[in-house]
Image 1 (cartoon, each protein chain N blue to C red):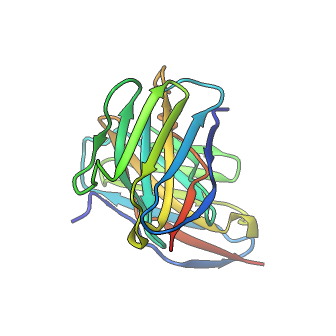
Image 2 (image 1 turned 90 degrees about the vertical axis):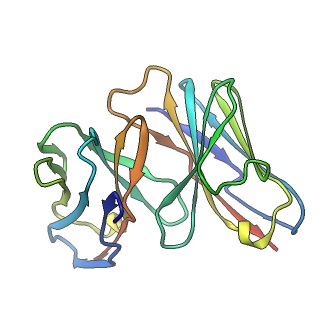
Length: 109
Length: 118
């Protein structure tokens, strides 16, 4: 079993829809949880990070962490074609990032 | 914000030659640099971790004599793929963590280098 599980997709939704991206993990030692966006042939870009359970909002993005269930989510409201990218979750303990496989998101105009 | 400049963005080389990839932190001091490779439609795979002035720590299965990492200064780390072969063709990405250990664990990534060995 992988430490971090993430459905690779692709996930295709119409423009304007609310997108839900998820990861599950098995290591209860993970402390920080992050979401990265990666456009094709580019390096990952940090979108959100969270530490505690609960929600964190930044514009159209909301990151949610449920440590009791070992489950994290990223919600994108009013999705735009420019949001089409691969979204990777990552979490850390001991200063090393453990990555999900990434979910390819396609927003159809 | 923190910026990591990585170049070249793409390179094609002949089999048997060596290729050097550079990553520079432009506005912060990167005490730790991570090097990843990524195959198509796969997640990032950590190759090695380097701390400034120290030898790199390689992940299991990564040949340290083939992938030479130098982190001689707080703003520059290099990855040299020696005697490259077609199976080394991949997307290589560096990531830096600042001296102050960003409380948000904001690892900053370079834009990546696509290496094609022919």
